[in-house]
Length: 60
Image (tube, rainbow, N blue to C red; front, side, top):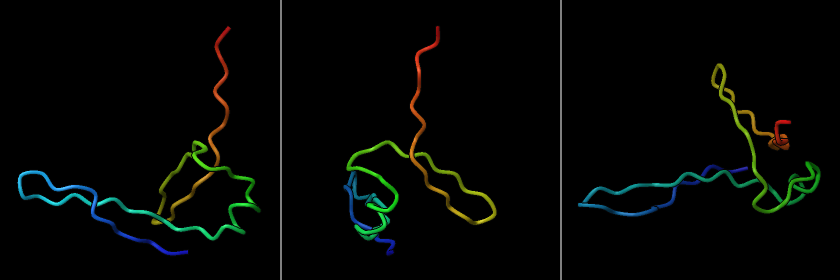
């Protein structure tokens, strides 16, 4: 995996960046993730955890 910083935009002389984590395709397949699938994340004690979002059901 690799963390990359890419230039996103510039406004009034200030540059804004977007960070991307590149995950190998074989790992995405093993996880069963799909393109544009919603993900949840959390950060605790310097550890980033990423998982599929749970489906949000409608309240009855």
